[in-house]
Image (cartoon, rainbow, N blue to C red; front, side, top):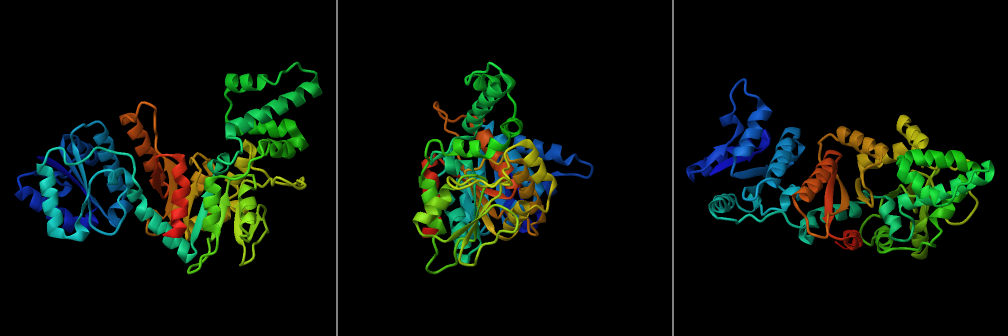
Length: 439
């Protein structure tokens, strides 16, 4: 059988050992130091080796996950496998590193539990038909290592929870598009009254569909035309359905409660304007401090809750100078000011803590920049942070295009320093968060 071997050169002794045993068993092994010659086009030769291989063996280690070249090979392996119905992919684990989830979806060999036994299992698996399963939906066991790492960070007091819109939507806060549409209706009603235009409320939906402006540009229209009423209109729109709480928010509160034998949660960062988490913390009598402007500080006994895009609690007066990151110009301000308090807070937590991202899609350009900066400055290039994502679940079942989309999402997250915790349903997110404090 033609076998392609992918590995980091720091794991050369394992690569040589596997090549020796596989060759003795009659397999034709593609190993770079044996198959590459001076002057060869490296990428072309590697891609050709992958394409021609009947089995793909990936040596997974701390070194391989830090290597950009090996990660390129991993990508080529995974992408190539999506177009092959029969080719085997066999990850081989040689240390305590977690196998990336797009590889752990295959049966893998763990050499740390016995070298000779592991090699024999590898040789046997290459000889058997259909022993390696196809990609499947994630199981709870595949997330165990991630949860264990998060639990240890929580126990050590170095865990930061980063919350996006998905956290609040489940509690009744409008989804982003619905929020924009509602405010667009308010803006059109205001323009119609002030300028004698015959605009109908239904025109807001038509306007958005016809001109397809980005959310940030529509945000700028809203901010400019609603003027001094913008913050109050935005708050009214946020709480119009009287949102309360959700399973995810309750799980976040549980994680925020002080531990008996460990340190408290280090901090919460939220991109949401609402105060639903604060209201839930109040009910559980968890001490916290909402921080939404430069110069604000929390006491050592308080959990800091950073609203990096601004803060609009349900009740109370809205200060005129309240800064809300809602429109294109506000994003530009955050992007060009590396020393803004919100950027410094995010970089500090990304650089010194383990962060768990919940309810985010990773499309925020400023967040992506900060993740990239923190990852580039990471001295050992390890993937320290985690994000919970839902798998694709089309009505007619997943196909290889869906597998490709999931793989590309995970690859993108990994390159930003994030491990992906996949769940099959949104209802599984809260139990994952709760398991961190119970592990």
